[in-house]
Image (cartoon, rainbow, N blue to C red; front, side):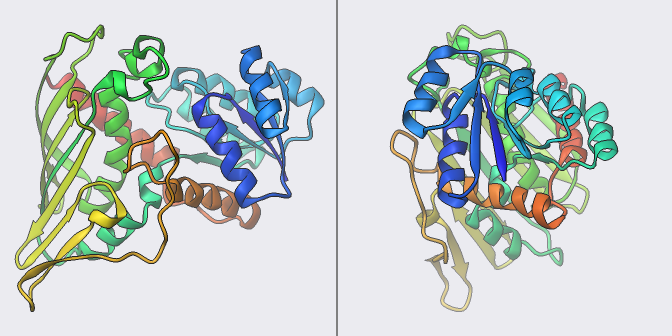
Length: 326
């Protein structure tokens, strides 16, 4: 298969590296408007690069494209790829620009349109989803936070999409977490939101949210999201009658209450965890590999992914409603 990676920043480089590991026989090409990134990709990964999707369409035989640029640029790039009849894997969009158009274009041209939702492919999340049954009520308390300048310390946060109001850091966290939360606990029926700005960061959006969620099946949650915490935190507690699960974002931190022994026990997962230097301990490489495999299964074997643009449109509407509630 011939694969085009569009956007050769940190995420694009990650996708190239993982594609090389998973599918060493694939031919990979690159697109980026920055000459320094094209040169770096050529030197480090040995791939041929051009400066535009249009040029790539003229020069390369592409079967699938990975859109790894900033979210606000995704819509037009996805459209261009679909017009070329390429299957598309896109990183988080964060805004619904062009969703209806691109879904229709994908149908018309027989292309797969795949949306990244990395946490759905984490082994810990898969385990949690398997344990949270529909035969009882559950509550959860979940805090995710990290100081915004620490997200990508190698670049200024005001020049990165998380500094933009439409694609802000809190919104990105919501877009990462809400897909798996709603698939685990049910569709959100009602929320109550407290939010404000409590830092001196040079941003024009709220930097912390405390959200009460009520799901259609009666499950409830307290969701705390911020770009304030100086310690990168992901702390989850889930409980019901005689049931309790806790997780701190890493595979070795997943624990479950054993009612027979009246004690909390570590859950040992089958998949060995993989990490990349320079990222926090809860950034696990396995999930990124798993979703690339899922995309390839959709393209090569016509398998329907469990998450896509239809589901994401509902999540983005929920995020919009929560941002507008305060």
